Amino acid sequence: MTMRDVCENTDLLAYVRTITEHDGNNVTDGKPLEVTGFKYYNFAMFYFGFCALISHILLAGITAVVVHKCVSLKMVHTAAHAFYCTVAFVFFLGEALLVRHSGILQLWLGIFKLDLLHSALGLLAFGIGVVGVGIKTLQKRERKREDPSATVKHFRSNHGFFGIVGCVLLLCCVLSGLPLYLYTIKSLQLVHRFCALSSFATLMISQIFSYNTGFARRQWKAYQVGIFKFFTFIALITTMNYEFRRFVREIVSLIIVQIWH
Image (spheres, rainbow, N blue to C red):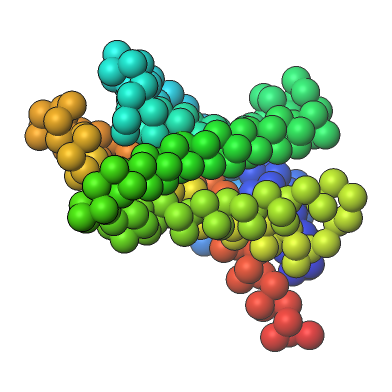
C-alpha cells in the first residue's frame, strides 16, 4: 500500500478495513497486522458511531429547546434571529457534516443521492442563516433610526464577530462545493472541507457566545445557560471529530508525499 493510496482514500474506516486485508505476514508489536487492524477497525466503528449518535441527539435537542422558546415568544425581536440561526447553523449545518459520512445512508441512498442530501442541508443552513442574520441587522438599523443617540453595535461582540466570520466561511464552503459536481479537483475538495469545518466551528463558537447575551440571560437561568454552553461544546467536538481527523490525515499524507517525491 503506497502513500498515494492512503492520501486518496476518502473514508478513514474504509482505509482501516484495507489494513485487515493486507498481508497477514506483517506484524505489529509481535501480532499479525491483520489482527491489529481488525481490532482498530472495530474500535473506530464504535467510537465514531457513538460520537455521531451523541451529535444527532445534541444538535436536535439544542435546536428543539431554542425553537420552543422562540415560538413561545411569538418570534418577536431577538427570538426570530435566534430561531433561524439556531435551526440553520446548529442543526442543518451540523447534520450536513454528519450525513456525508453515514454508512447507513450511503447504503440506502447511494453516494450521489447522499451528496445531494449533504448539499441540500448545507444550502438550507446558508439560506436560513442569512435570513436570521438579516433580521437582526434590520432590527439594529431600525433601532438606530428610531433613536439616533442609541449605541447600537453589530458584529463587534464575540457573538457577532464569530457569527459573521462563520457566515463568510460558509459562503466559501457553498461556492467551493457546488463545482465539485462537475469537476473532481483535489485542491478544491480540500478547500471545501476546510471551509466546512472552520465555518461550523466558528458558528458554534458564536452560538456559545450567544448564551451570554441579554436575550439568553432573560429567558434562562444561569445554570441552564451553563448547561447550554456545555452541550453545545460537546456537540461541536463530536460533530467535527470524524471529518477533522480525515482532513488532517489527508493533509499530512499530502505533505509527506510532496517531501518524498
